[in-house]
Image 1 (cartoon, one colour):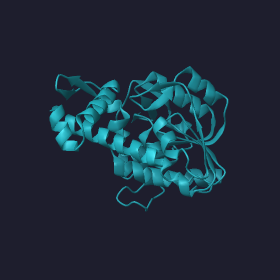
Image 2 (cartoon, helix red, strand yellow):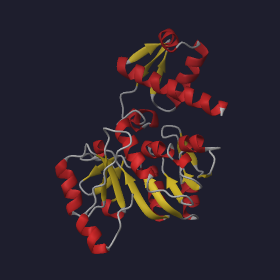
Image 3 (cartoon, rainbow, N blue to C red):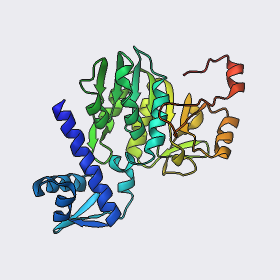
Image 4 (tube, one colour):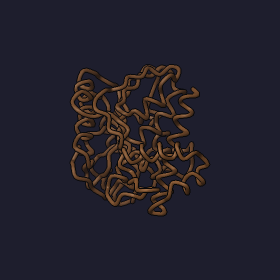
Length: 285
């Protein structure tokens, strides 16, 4: 547990360094030493790691930001975006998990927030290609953790590639919880082809597919089309979703659930009443 706490402290400091550098555009080593009250050696290690992840560029005596899309794709950047909304979505999604379930969590930051809720559910088997999620769940009582191998990508803090896809293909899960980069119209998109391949493999391995997408992801697009929203059994978003988008999804029989992001423990289900009546389904809470 001490090692895990230290790892979380390091991760938090590095996220803060990225925030600090992005805000200012650049920073000197001595400036970071004073700001984060640590040694020059520690700062050098942090910057070496962040540079390896493509988040910053090391220069003589300091560091600068990178003017490209890599920062926005990184897990460190995504972990600080729409945090309240992601936590509300994760809380609602956790109610869909029961003791004895076998679930899959992708590399998304929303799935990482969902992993915070698993300890109190009971015996659950968790498959994931996310090193961050695996680290958080390692040693947690009642959690049977199965880490999917492959080629590690530091920007996403997760594993991808052929080995990962083959491992997924040999398994079956009750429910997949995953996210995407963008939702345009009635389609889900992601900017990275290798990540799309793993997400598709996870979708094929799941009896039930749950898409976790905060409202900021709607109305934008990314390079690669992953799937139609109709291919997911449930789409969970937050109450920041524009009413016209929400109405359109419901008009196309998308099973939509909306989490209230203005409170930590209150959630709201918005289910297509006609569809439930026609199919005789019970709302899943």
